[in-house]
Length: 167
Image 1 (cartoon, rainbow, N blue to C red):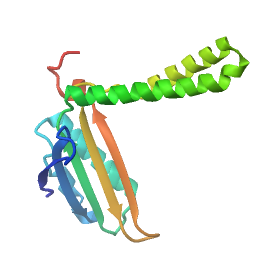
Image 2 (cartoon, one colour; image 1 turned 90 degrees about the vertical axis):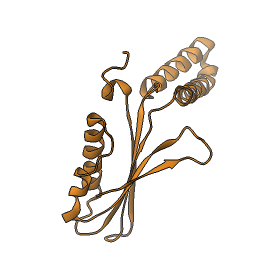
Image 3 (tube, one colour; image 1 turned 60 degrees about the vertical axis):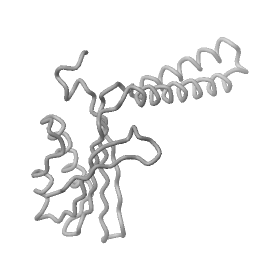
Image 4 (cartoon, rainbow, N blue to C red; image 1 turned 180 degrees about the horizontal axis):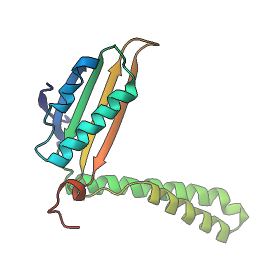
């Protein structure tokens, strides 16, 4: 069974969580099912299902798979604000760049293209909220055609796991 250890980022005290490390063989995959990643049932089921899908994606076969699963504490307001600010900066930069490229065709065309690009980027990038959970899964398999590594992160919105949160 995976045993969790508390982690905290050295440069940023906002990153705290629990990390679980596994060495999985095909006959020991049940250790993921038997691990309590969170006392919240919804979060625990999400992490378990995501880890099992990630293991299948790795196609380890008979080889060992080293897997690390990190469940971070709920996101504080300051971190959500920082991520949303970055999201807006990216959207405005791309929109401005597109407007600059389309500018020689005329001011109206440049402004329209810039606004359209900014709107598309903002609609494709998620908005973060206080209390959102970040889950990271990293897996490594040696053998076959060489070492294969895959990393995936998920954001679980607070509304999904906390039924008492204001919507």
